[in-house]
Amino acid sequence: MDLEGIEMMISIASVTLLLLAFAPPVIAQTSNGVTTIQSVEPVSGKTGDVMKVTGAYLDKQNISALYLTNGAVDIKVVIVEQTATMLRFRIPAEAKPGRFALMVLVGKGSEEKLLEQPVKITVLAGDSTVT
Image 1 (cartoon, rainbow, N blue to C red):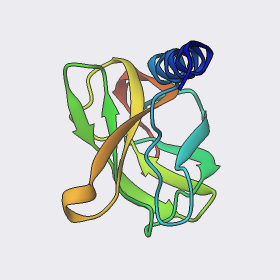
Image 2: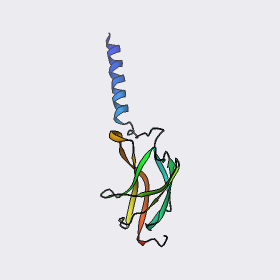
Image 3: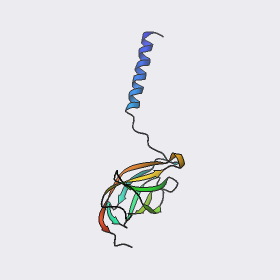
Image 4: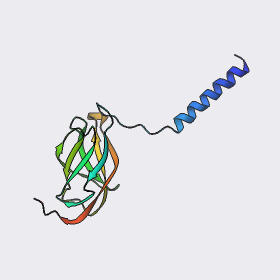
């Protein structure tokens, strides 16, 4: 191999390393696709309120649990309805007032992963008047 060939191989290797260094993080995929939460309504509520989440691959086959997280505390919520594109959950009584991100548990067994979603809710002081 001549000098020009060696320089080309070094150049290709350098570009490959740069691409790997700046590649986006790997997104955990479920059995059907990438679980994503796109929105939540309403954006705030009190403990006991039911919130509606929309997104993709939200069914029981793909999400086994949903949490509220503020980075320090993770609170598991009760999912009251769940389809592939929508789920409803109740804000648990132990949730203190503040801002929380939604986090999903995807995968099975040793493949389980918690994925924090870019969607947030605000828990307001007081209890819901809805029963």
